[in-house]
Length: 432
Image 1 (cartoon, rainbow, N blue to C red):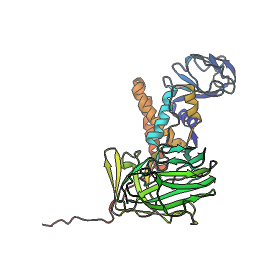
Image 2: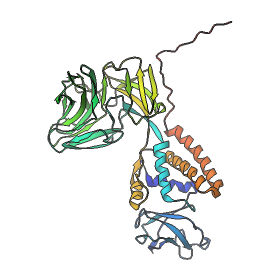
Image 3: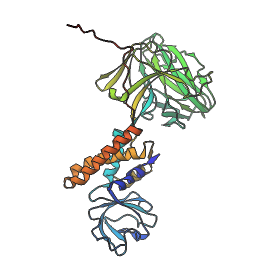
Image 4: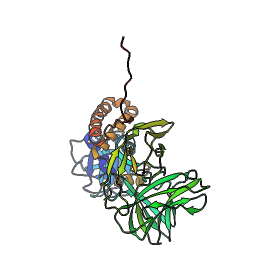
């Protein structure tokens, strides 16, 4: 996994970071002493004029300042404003090309992760909002519990994330956002579960009538660690118009890890994808999982067979994406491929704490893929900010485009032409 600092420091290979250095002795708050790299009469005192310096480890980690001048006789790089602490021999630093601001680099890095770098990932075709916890704990309300969404502890093709719920009281749970419905509608529900402590329980709650809905299928409780799954069906009771899915632990000490929530109406032929999906271009193939894991079955999660289904019309409706299926959904979990972008490593870029947070954070995105995207955005920005340096930035942008194209082919999403009809058709043409 690449850290934010490792991605940014790739800029040394592009001429945007002019020097990566480390102090050789304790300096002062006004200077860095580096007798190894800066003590040379070959350097003019103006070598780094107009450049920003960023401390990247040791005393003052994350602080930035502007170069004042270089004392090449002693290897001292003077800065203004001064640092809060004197850099030591443990302090590493970065000197940028004149005018390039380190915070712009961090913004470009994160914009590359959330706008350019991507990969296909499977997500459940579900009426439950944020069914695979891709948006963290959004739409999952905790009651007598705490919840943490995060990457799976092991690779699993059917879910990138899981939700770990730790009870603070008996029958602690997380509740999905409400699903609105009509009486007598029939549903299918499949939820993988691994019980770290206590007993897990699956509940479909009739909010209108204040009661649990009777479920058929597997057992509705589970124990022991190692993923199995609840696979149940049910019918909406009379007078009910609102339900929720509850992921519950029975004991006050229960700790339960939950996988993606597959919930759909039986014989459903139209379904809206998660609000995060705003373009049909972000949707790939649609799959049905045959012989899914469930309580009482011996399969290991991730080893199930999956069948790509055709006869799916993917429609753009405003900023939403809808699937219209030729054949209704059956009693199986369904997944769609979504083009998923990576997560930004920082949420802000103005303080020392913001910078060190981004440096320490890591991403599963390939280092060189992320770096190429970062350089592309940075070059596009500085073609506008530094029009006097067009030759340099244009050459950087051209190289970034070439490398990004290469890494997009290697690490990015494969092209996914969708099969939207069950069989081909032809239009007869009258010959004259």
